[in-house]
Length: 295
Image 1 (cartoon, rainbow, N blue to C red):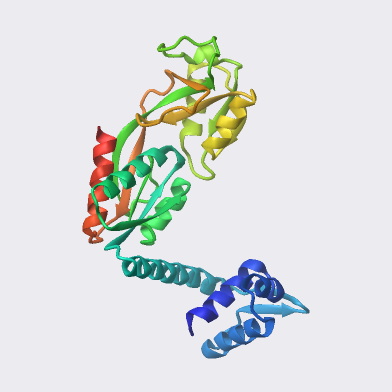
Image 2 (tube, rainbow, N blue to C red; image 1 turned 135 degrees about the horizontal axis):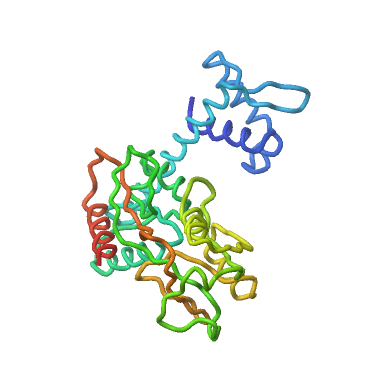
């Protein structure tokens, strides 16, 4: 077994045919067939069921795919780390963040670079569930995500509170600057909400808060992408309800107004692997995150 054979196997599973995988990898199709046959003969297993020209991955093949994907990801990260060291960097930090925590991570990166540390960064934006998995698998050194954190095996520090704001176009005179908006004022107003792909989060809390207040919540769209919410507000589809932290500044042409909606605030969280000795650069980056989030 070697990494090339596993990479070939993974490509065939993901693209569901030898021909499609060969096109993506830019290798001859017989090379893929030979690599898969060698793996099957080495372990005495069947990785695919063959019916005519079609391939269906077996249960054994699915097990191999999951393990191979993890191994290839680790090998890729190792290769990138060594290349970074070869270019003169002393460490390579792998940091995860959600869209809401983007400004925090970019501030940390800028600060560490200003300090003169010979460090390179690999930044991964993702949904909270994905970030938790990547931290657990040591694919990320740490991540800034949202509470609640579902994975009890991780180190978790609940830090900065977030507030809920109404995102509207600049010049929308329905809202008074500086005053908190009550749920009653948003009854039947078309709203665009941020929502996780899986698991509970801010969307569910907002809907529960409206229900508790006895106010009708008219959601015309939800999105996992804050940029999409800005665009929908700009095109007058609806007004956005967003969780933000102190570093967030609205884009030009937009205004934000605080909304008195949730009885307890949303919170950002720092997550990291337990029992993992941290490099000094990782420790410094996490300390900067704590300082920013607590400040």
